[in-house]
Amino acid sequence: MTKARRMIADSIKLVDAVCEIVDARIPYSSRNPDMDEISGGRPRIIVLNRVDQADPALTAAWRGYFAGAGAAVLETDSKSGKGVAGLSAVVNAVLADKLERYAERGQAGRKLRLLVAGIPNVGKSSFINRVAKRKAAATSDRPGVTRGKQWISVDSRLELMDTPGILWPKFEDRTVAENLAFTGAIRDEIMDTETLGANLLMRLSVLYPQSIADRYKVFAGQGGSVAGQGGSVAGQGDTGFDLLAAAAKNRGFLVSGGEFDLLRMATVLLDEFRGGKLGRITLERAPQG
Figure 1 (tube, one colour):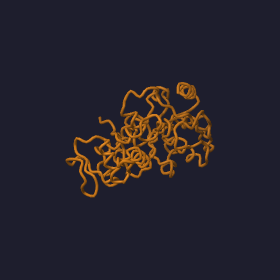
Figure 2 (cartoon, rainbow, N blue to C red):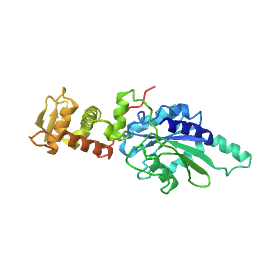
Figure 3 (cartoon, rainbow, N blue to C red):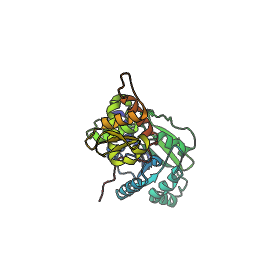
Figure 4 (spheres, rainbow, N blue to C red):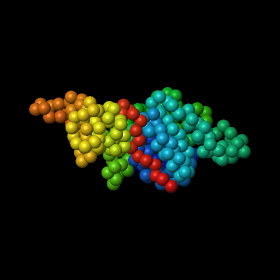
């Protein structure tokens, strides 16, 4: 990670602007805090990717937050390509002064260069491929696929520098670490799957209780862990593991001896959350004021 950070910092002088891809479901956690320093004052573009899986109202709030901080903002779904075509207009707006100077010098056709950065597994390579309209960058649902920088020509006016996804060395904020794990930015082997699933279900029971009620027939905060309403009702004092057990019960996930298969339920929960099957969910709220 240190090597990748140094490489990106050294490359800043070669580009006109910095484009940072973030996961719209966790816009704060999926930003590398080092990027503000690394960008060296270059114009910034924040791409809120995976907006198709994020809460629309909260995406709008995050857009306003980043715009208020001086960044241009683009909302995309790189998997389907939605919004990606808007990059050219955003680049032209961000670099309007530079383009005007080029025109005054008779260099109107000069190519613009954009450094594209992002932590692992936020859809950076898919975004680049959509912009380039070809498979120019390697993609995977596993973090850490891009290993080095590479230049990708989009057209006669724009060139992108793809860079490795880098995470900061320490996750001092436990919530940030969990958010990254929920979305797959951290390899699943690093954290305990059952605990992760329990914590995600607990978070969803507060933020999106209807989503888990609809999907797993688990109804949180209704006075005791008993069967009811066609599912299981999780009491106000129940833990995430209680919620996970209730969901496992409703799915019929059992192991020998009649115990609930929490690992299987946690794995299914994480897969379905990452696949957008629980609805449009954003785990973080934009700061106010």
